[in-house]
Each structure stands twice: as structure tokens, then as C-alpha cells.
Amino acid sequence: MATSRLLQVVLIYQHDSEFHQVLVKNCGSKNLIELHKLIFDKYLRYQLLILTFRGSKSIQEHQDILDFTLGKNYEKAQFILKTHITNGIDHALQNFKLD
Image (cartoon, rainbow, N blue to C red; front, top):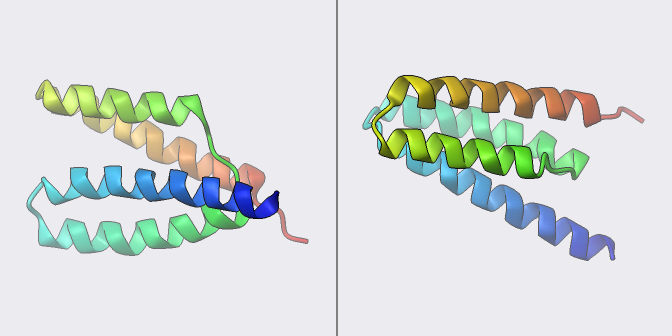
């Protein structure tokens, strides 16, 4: 049972990582790509330690980011992205338990 849950969480975060990588790669900045990789890899480690997922809120934020980006409303996409990152960090901090 635990293995199934772990696999499910790993797949969720794999797709999450791919989503963010596509966004960052399309900005064309090599520095931003490298910075994102460094930060996101560390963030992902913490997410895998807590084995939780923000669920539909995170999915909706991804959809909004995608929609605003494709619609070329970059200010709104950036605002949602900042909110998404903050919510992800808050979630990690609230669920990370030192035992």
C-alpha cells in the first residue's frame, strides 16, 4: 500500500516538474533555467519527504498559469505563478514534521 502511494506521489511531482520546466524553458533565459532547476530540485525533495499533494488547488493554478500564458496575459500568469509558488512552500512548511 505504501509503495502504491509513493508511486502516485512521485508521478504527480514528475508531471508538476515537467509543467514548470516547460514554462521556464520557453522564456529563453539560460540563467533562469539553471536557477529554476536548482531550486525546484531542492523543493521537490521536501515534497517527496512529506508525501502530500495540494490537490485540485494546485491543478487549477497550473491551468490558470497555462491559460494566461497562452492568452499572452503575462502579468496575470506571473501573479498566479507567484501565488502557486507561495502556496506550495506554505504547504510544505505546514506538512513537514521533524520527528
